[in-house]
Length: 247
Image (tube, rainbow, N blue to C red; front, top):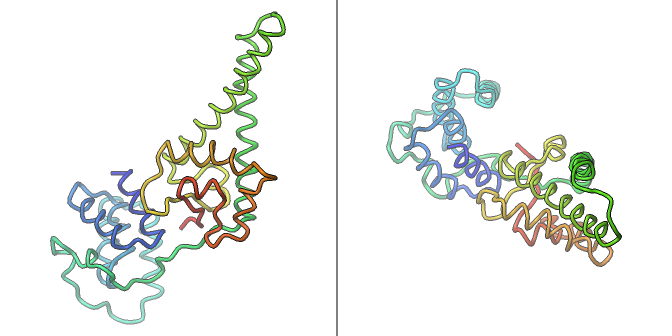
């Protein structure tokens, strides 16, 4: 359910509302949790329906913070009695109707300064991790040898650095909703343009192969984001991703 919820979050963030509602229809039929009802509230067609979904989320998990905050916002912003709604009781609730009007569903692209700072944080963490891995290899994997053996060890060290980076990005991008520690610290995240969930291959394509390609020709691939409409570097375009402000 957590992977499906992550996919729903991404679809909502990218304003793919019809896709989000299709996913929610499946999620609400299959043992929905508090997060599922909270996400349903984000695409509700009325204030009353939103309250009902949030109430259901808090029934399941009274300590679910996002639902509490959303409910508090409703209390503050509410200026009239909510209209009655039978949608929640219907098997095919109106949240699945296409092109329903709803507010605050657009996403904001992350600033380039935020992305740079996030990358600096991740680079520092990776430097520490890679140094530990290489130190272990040098301690237990290298002995005295000739130049050819030392050259081979240099290749192994390079491969260890690449492997460490790959595992780092795969783990955080697929398990933490598109956020590495650096991006989480800056309140931004990576999402797929088509609303799909990030995969291990997406992480490798963007952050390993894509970073290498973007670094070519005087880092032209990184600079591309300065004038691109979606602020995509070559690595973003290669993986079909954008970097947005996290909700």
